Image 1 (cartoon, helix red, strand yellow):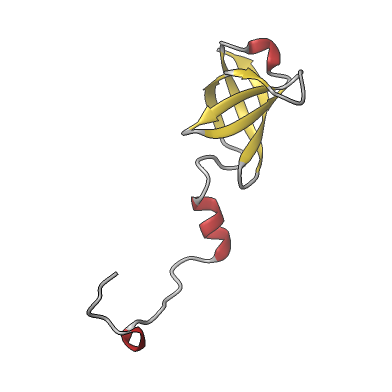
Image 2 (cartoon, rainbow, N blue to C red):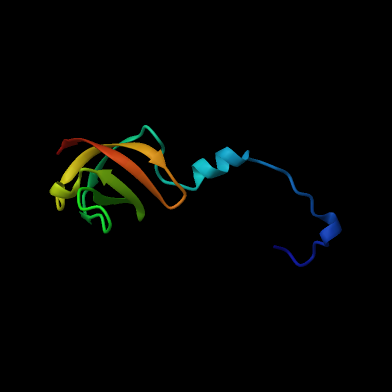
Length: 91
């Protein structure tokens, strides 16, 4: 901000559509294929694993058996606070 501007002098201009802003807010996109490290077992589903991309949580379906290993995954669904991914192969 700048204290020398008065509110009447400031104009708002929309630079991005709402869906573009939503896409910018997550580090992964649906359909993206990633190499990740499965860090832990999901807290409420013992079959799934948890990986992270820039701190963002990926729930890896059927990834619990790969804790401590790297895997290729495909992001299937993206939510505001986490995403789901399916296991493609161990690396």
